[in-house]
Image (cartoon, rainbow, N blue to C red; front, side, top):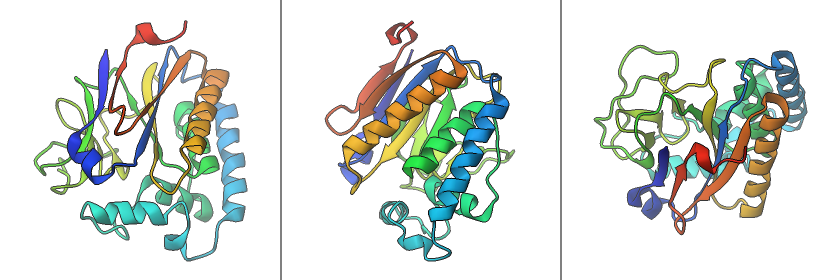
Length: 240
């Protein structure tokens, strides 16, 4: 079992953040490859048609994250949140299919315009903590080979041996990436004000339903915040 926890230093900086978890197990991430890619491509088209040609920084899905990144000391114009990167990629036509689970969560991220990410739980060592970096934590980014520790003070997800995602949702680690072999994962949907928490919960439900409908398995939703800062991701807790 893996515990997922919001550290005090994170809560103190972002007391109103809502961190939604969709724990999935028993999925077949080789299933419905074409169908998942088609879902993503349809959503890319729908989302791109509604996005402005410029002034991305002021977009209501992007501006709060730019403010959040500035709050922990990085330049948001250089270090962009995952939702900003995703929306920019959709608009420019650069967003591509990766694998079914990633395609499905990217389609939800675009539809609800919220950051969504995921970790392969079989590659996680110990517990997952959302905290602030000392700047010494090991981190090898997705597709990389070199160690790139996060900036001191940056928000990070980490486990017992290193960073899982640097600068909150900016760059994922290569070690815990979702692949065709992934059977157990935690998908993370993040919300900060001014988003209505009820909309956040609807996005979580949509993601859980979409994964089960296309990849099988079982899911369980949790929401972490300052009142409920920790959850246990245990297989025995999932519906069978």
